[in-house]
Amino acid sequence: MKIRNYWNLRDFGANLWEKSNRIQRVVIALIAIFLVALLPFAGNGILATPISAYDAVLVYPVAIFILMALGLNIVVGKSGMLDLGYVAFFAIGAYTMALMGTLTGLNTWEIMPFGIAFAMIAGVLLGLPTLRVRGDYLAIVTLGFGEIVRLVVLNSTWSKGPNGIANIPMPPNIGPLEFDLFNQKLFFWVVLIMILLTIWMIRRLSVRRPGRAWEAIRQDEDAAELMGIPTLKYKIWSFTLGAAIGGAAGVLYASKNLYIAPEMFTLNVSVLILACVVLGGIGNIWGVVVGATIIGYLPERIRFISDARLLVFGIVLVVVMNFRPDGLLPRKKREKAIVKKGVNK
Image: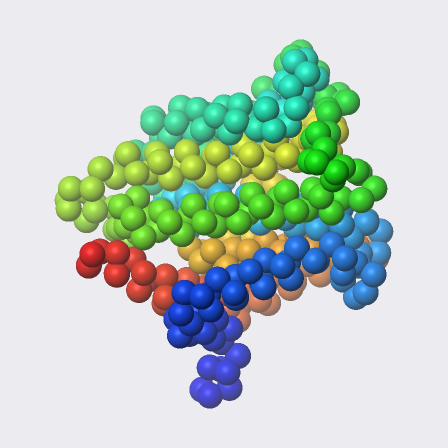
């Protein structure tokens, strides 16, 4: 029992945070952000991947997976809704960037609000008629939505069908810093900022009315409805916020990749992002970050074993989920305490 407590990183981190005052917490957070920002320089050691450039892997899939998993965690982890079509919002953001970037001459940061807005509109349009159903039925509907979006871009002339869209512009320079495909540190730092903003937003919402409503809906939707919570309204909010983050990730992905095609937005992406949430710990922000890091990085790290790497990757996931059925970092006790504290205010 003592050994288990010693290795319980979740409780260790939560206790350390609880015992720290405000200044100490700021220092801890700044040190952690600084160390993470240095990760692109750590690619010459054991972290280097055998085929792909380390800094490129760090941007996609690792950082983009983390960003998308945080968005999906609002829907799955916070509100308890199973979404299997999350890749659709990712695709909407990416195609918004591709079309507007090649046709209008706007840059990535000018297109970003459009990509987020279109993804949010899609989330509302999908959520209004479908979020009244639950569980497996909702999963099937969202799964169908993801496939519909992929088939539309696959069979449309404006999206150039299976040929995809090429020559997507890269983001403009940020002062003296220049985006470069052969040195993707700046891409990583941009995604890191987006991840930090997303975490800040989720944490702020978790202790306010939307977070408490999502918690109630996740625990028991019928009871929440009887208590007077407008469940459909908060479910749509959850769905829309998750879609917005997926759209933002899509815009940046298209701008970084310079080319997109329908085969990049298959069901597999949705499954992988959902696996990030489940493996890390449903509802736990830091668990989702850990899960997305492993699922994004591990297949690239073991790429040297060729075709067997997916088999090894699958075996690792099965073993981990057998020993940690609630995920590597289950939902923290402290997060529950925050929600409870917010209720008592």
